[in-house]
Image (cartoon, rainbow, N blue to C red):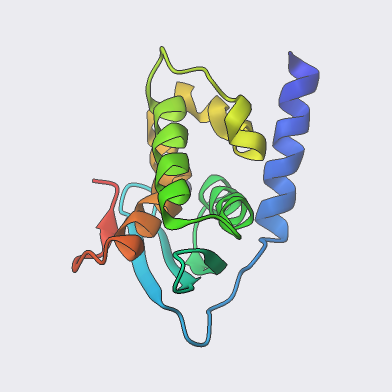
Length: 149
Ligand code: ZN
């Protein structure tokens, strides 16, 4: 198992050092902020969704710890080309896997499954899900910035 953990850590380190899609979008159709006061993670997530509800681009800006940054980066990779409904489903599956003991179905999560290790650290779960909460805020046009509290 330790070899696997090492691989997971490498992916997290890589995405933290070189976050993917780390920029603002020029004309986002959706955007929302997310804030995790426990850790100080603070991101804005941008989406460009076309008229068929397909996510053409997703990006983020802001600052956070390694887990929150890597998770946001992995999220942007996972969501490009998906529909809003698929993004919603992925959010719920990911959220279940990192928060519920009985939820261990990680196959459909692809690379996001790397973050399952945070389950043992409740404070880190908030880091890992922050960008996803912001995404939910953006998709569903919530007025208040998303917060993990
Ligand atoms: Zn954090």
